[in-house]
Length: 297
Image 1 (cartoon, rainbow, N blue to C red):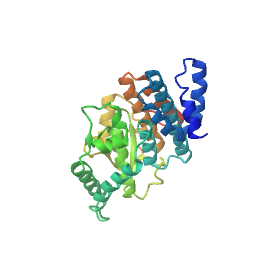
Image 2: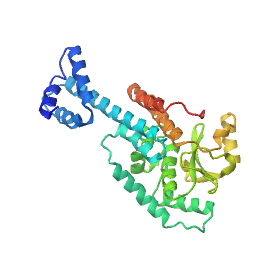
Image 3: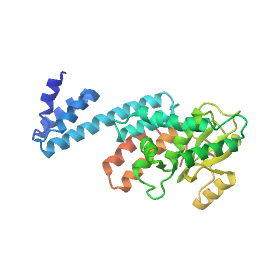
Image 4: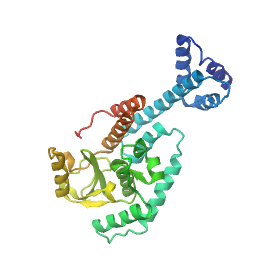
């Protein structure tokens, strides 16, 4: 369909007949991403009413959500091996025009600063201390305790901009950088919290294998608390305070799929607290697309 034909179709968006609008809406949505620029230009016309703009916004949202849905399906089909890709897909939900190369460039800059200070002669503890100094002290990342439940804490581009996030988003960035630096850190799904496990380098499999056992964990790192190093006893104390059972999954690495699933769950809860049912429903649908988790959190 030519742009002229698309523009002619768009002029019917504010038809008062709901049946006509439903048909027009369906045809526009089927056109997918390439119709987005035309819709965005149409939205900017000064002489159009609120109904027209509201319907354009609804159609744009539907097209963007479908694109995120398709990309998340493709990511799942690969086994979720690339954690950064999964996190970027979630950011696309809220920021469809996000510059992914800019995000990757920022991560590469932080990674370079850490790499310059690391060497093979350091112990695991020393490597984490170096990482923490560059990540938290030099680049200024910290937990967003004042606005803990804000949705922006779950979008990796927002966290990179503000240098503030929740336990999961900070851990995602931490893990992505660690993987690029060949440091064996993997996420651990705790109830109401999220930490990283530093693994015995001789024991780990693939980045998303999720097969490493507790016996392979040297220690834990709390990215929300300036990279505090924790032992099993601290995990036990945390679980005891919550009065929950000490399940094996609370001590062992989870998969990247579990991480993105939890990220979507966090987003849904954030929008629920803001009383935004539409925004709440979208992450829930995307989360369900990934299927059930093997871990109960």
